[in-house]
Length: 226
Image (cartoon, rainbow, N blue to C red):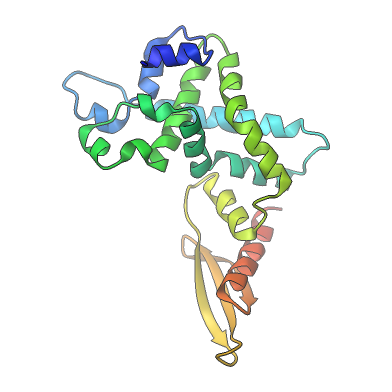
């Protein structure tokens, strides 16, 4: 099945097919072409804004109303790299991605970063079509089920919360570091700090590294989400 058939079967109303092809064009493919070809970075930027607005608006109208902090947290769970890659897989977008030979050989078609970018570019291209319901049609297919999970608190641990919050805007990774271990060997007490860009954002103490990391993440999260 080609891209045009896929879009039609999924119920999208496309009047500018060229922009859809652009959404599925990775830079590695462009670099190998002898004729001018446009990659999907600009659409990716647009799609990111479209996604942020769509999710924020949906969360705003939930009943009972969510606090600003809860809206921020839940949005971060829905728009991070892992979630976007998951959505792209659910929609089978990777099957239509135009990749360079080298990127194809190294598994780029299934790489989270590439699929997340593709998902955003796809949304950007859908937004530029005359039928503005395309974006709504797409996101309802993948996000509503994830929203129920996010609202249920199924992933309610502070390390997950903190990482999702940070990745929503920066896609960076927080780092945990044990700075001291006290007490007897059979009952040690660990002190851990959590860092972002080598800056300490939180501290935690626990009877295991895992517990101390959770406490450090909780401390950092409470400072970042106010």
